[in-house]
Length: 123
Image 1 (spheres, rainbow, N blue to C red):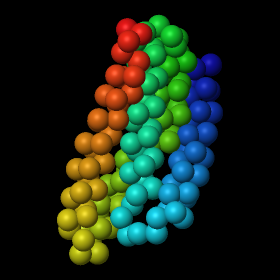
Image 2: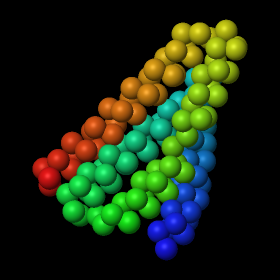
Image 3: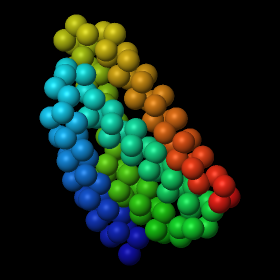
Image 4: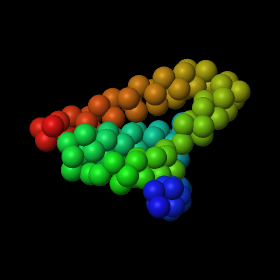
């Protein structure tokens, strides 16, 4: 049952990624992949919140696994972030490429920590 839930939530996460990325791209038309960064950082924050809730006992193990692995896994897209980095570098935007790669990774780690910090009082 957990595997089915992971698959369903993964599909929902992918649809959410498509929607959020499209909304960000529509609002900020730029060569920098702001939509992908927004998706990865917000998904990492959500993963931190859900993981913290699981650690606090507010979310069961199977539900937490399905939510983090399924939804957050389907929502975040680090492969696209790296493809965007290569595209930026190939198009002669080396600084933007470095900022995208390092920035996405760094901000995503900080977002997970922020999500855990929000739930920390429950631990």
